[in-house]
Length: 227
Ligand SMILES: C[S@@+](CC[C@H](N)C(=O)[O-])C[C@H]1O[C@@H](n2cnc3c(N)ncnc32)[C@H](O)[C@@H]1O
Image 1 (cartoon, rainbow, N blue to C red):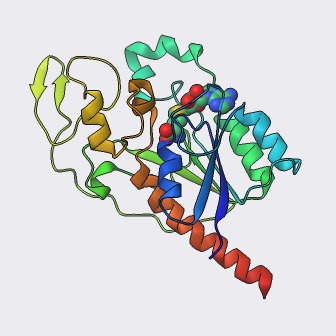
Image 2 (image 1 turned 90 degrees about the horizontal axis):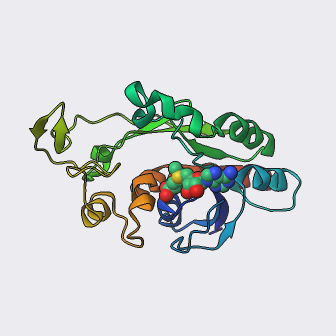
């Protein structure tokens, strides 16, 4: 059975990459502007936009592309009273999407601005985080999964009131947020203990789910070409 190469753009420490690798059929290679020694697969310190241009030029050869452009410009942490922070962050989503379309390859974009072709949540995989994430599928489609009712609340303070619950907050730094060990267990990420890398990560269960469908799509494309 063929193993497909997937460029993991804006890879950070590889939450997404680990999930793709877990399919047993996808070989991720990471690209991040920051050196990420914890990334568990081949890694390149490189700009994602430049990398997409190299893929289009045929200078880098892959079968699929994943991208998690930085989301700080749109995530809930920079809404409301934190809106003033928005201008501090670059928003690469539009350019990333345009270039991914231009590759002609099947792609997956995870970002708050992404078209919600697939929306995944920790409860769908029995995880200890809620962590809704939107995924836009570029140049391919798959079925939309059903959302599952949450078992309770995210543990922590809301407007000064303490709530207990089966999920931890795997973002930010406040006293009620998950510890590094709790975040690792809650998301199934044990190869990095860097708090920032954990708070940025996609739980690997999410990209394993998407990766399995991506492999089926790639296999179908191969069969079509061979016919
Ligand atoms: C949301 S995180 C990605 C999380 C990752 N998908 C995971 O599951 O662990 C975004 C990453 O984009 C990286 N980044 C920011 N600007 C970049 C650029 N121009 N090119 C490549 N990476 C960039 C940041 O260093 C950060 O690691």
